[in-house]
Length: 371
Image 1 (cartoon, rainbow, N blue to C red):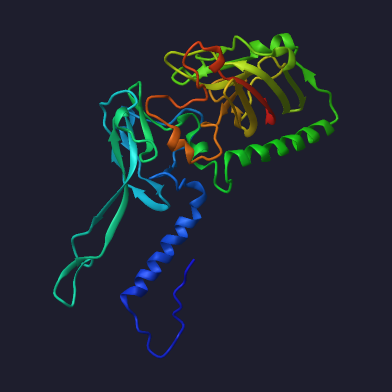
Image 2 (cartoon, rainbow, N blue to C red):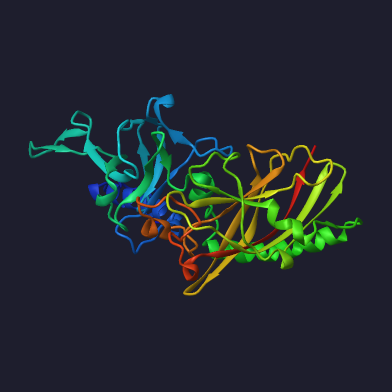
């Protein structure tokens, strides 16, 4: 980061170029700080800093909060921008969206409006803010528009990838890519498995014939508890769910192989769920959060990524698992692959074509507190 040296004595010849040098140094420093979060191959890329308390239900903006988007900060092409509190449209079409754009203006008054030595008036205080611009699904330009919100049924505005928006937006602080996270987590999982094995108690395993009934899925718009539906096909014979309890601490190790996601016509699958209500003495699984690994293989591609694992906030004996979309190396590529015509999810099939239907394998270990 460049620095203006001001320790010299003898009468410093201060000129306008010195102010420009300092301004450029600061801006370049901030741009470098967020460089690994931005895809510079796109015309525009960025994200907002989500400060909404996320507790399991996707944050929404609707009539209950007067259609008001709260004052927030954003990164757009490496520049930090304030987004003032914004009243959103209360009438819109499904999958209309708000995108993040730069809004620059001048104060129009002194001291920003200055009279120069040649008697000209020049605006010098430029205000650079972020603004939310409403666009229809058809007018969205991939790689240029930075999506923030999409219109959903309700009616309501939902954050992009609302199912785990807080996690997605800043998953990469200090992490270069989702692939790096997945590889690091795989190493961590092996270490955790070793540590759990050292605990002097026996594993209890659920019979393989009972595993499939404990694995469920949920649609993007379904109620988080009532919409849970058992999967209809998986390789339960080569899967396992095993656990051990020590007092109020429970350890769980799972491998769920070849889960077929059913075809959808309206709502894609957004979450997998594991029901642990069969474990004797478990009445409530307390808050926890960790990361596992998911892999998927179909005829034309092989996808893998991080699997977020946490307690199901609306069902006390279930575990909620979300595969981190868009199954790519870079969080920035989300802006390139997202379209307002598709609800963000981990399901990619829309027809009954078996060759295109994704088949997921989920694995991980976690420790949680129960009561």
